[in-house]
Length: 254
Image (cartoon, rainbow, N blue to C red):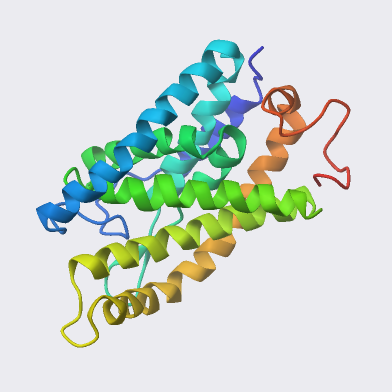
């Protein structure tokens, strides 16, 4: 049964979406040499295909999860479309993939991430078609797998659910930008120092804005997760996030 409370999250997310051209940390159209653009597309493709299979299986077994899946996609779309100026005249932004990775797993979220990046490239000039593979790899694959792994590790370590969600979203965000920095460094190595020197330059530039953004994204993800825990507990039980009888506020996931 669909949870009507989820529609309020949709409305909230839409209010934050401002369609404008962005020159953010999604690698922009035509920026990568074709050989690197093709390389990242080929690397990303198998994960996305597996993600399609994963989503199809989950939706077939539990069609009531479709709305929650849509919320996860909308959350990623809106957050990764927002941007703040960076010190280079470009900009940085949240990623929003941590929530979906926790709920549906990294493979499924890689598909949502790809769809998000594709629509942003087409509608907002945010990212690009030729660089889609690279952006999918950094945000929708590395970001989601790091977020999912961080959440699972934190839970096994006995960390409360709120802190686990915060760490997952924040580290997923940061590792997206670490990956993007190395992607750019591989494509454009420095004349002196090569790839590592170039990577250090990109990491240093974007750390100024990205670290505060990662913290902010972590906090916002906790707020949305707590909302879902309160109003969509049955869906979270279905996804094995919680067990029956657990309620928001318990030590295990408050």
